[in-house]
Image (cartoon, rainbow, N blue to C red):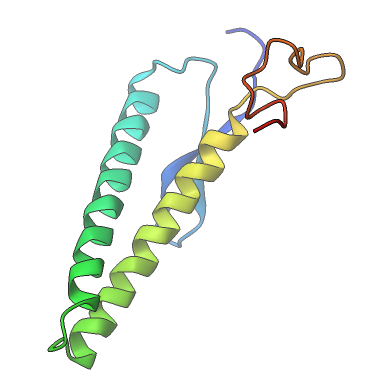
Length: 114
């Protein structure tokens, strides 16, 4: 096994609610692929929930019980998406000095012009 590049935050917790991590250099291991699949499901479910939330919030007949249930599900989806963002962000390569893109080759929006 090569030098370890870091720990990957997995999209689930242990029974006590503590985060789980994967220590592997192989981004294509069975556990890594399983985590990728679960993250994809979580992101998809969050998007579907958002559509449902917009519809329910626009319904004048929505009662407090429905809205409370919706708020609970939105909190769960937000927790999942934030965990995915944290995990994926931690796996992005860091830019060091001299790694900044050449402003002459960057897209206009990245170079600060509009």
